[in-house]
Image 1: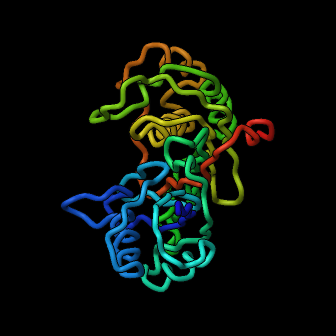
Image 2: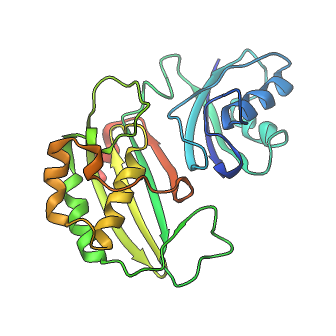
Length: 251
């Protein structure tokens, strides 16, 4: 039986989603919890690989088991074995053709800035603190140029072995609520560090270091050095993964 799970986590203490030799990972913790519950090793497949320090509200994964545990109970059973900074918030039976990664048609990420003279003691691991003035209107103008299908070579960190750099951004919003500035992006896929580089570029626009009107040329040039720096990991969170086209009609 194939089980799909939805996971939220604080990525501060982890080397990212994917198993690795030199740091604990989210995948490792869940697989170890599953092995404890099932009595046998169990591999899980995630919808996407979040980097070290990146968080999630709605990461999705699947695994296969012949256990008699009801699918909807796996979240309760696993949460008894997982550390407090990882929670399985939903579990359900999935069809044999469901694949957490290959079946995903879109993802929603949010980057959060804490825009105040002093950093937040409580949100230091989930926001990027910026005390300097930011021009929100120019950031919003720049954001609109990212929407659509483009070659995002200029917004990819080195080290990615993904073939093809064309992606579609359905929507990119920059909003403010009190001291929080949110950069929400919906797309059909993202390159390595793409969202964090877009966030860093929009921050440079807000600080007046890059003109909003230059964004189309930066995208077209494909030159990483012309885009902004890679924003710190702690401000980024995977919010949701989509498995049908319904969400596109509601953006």
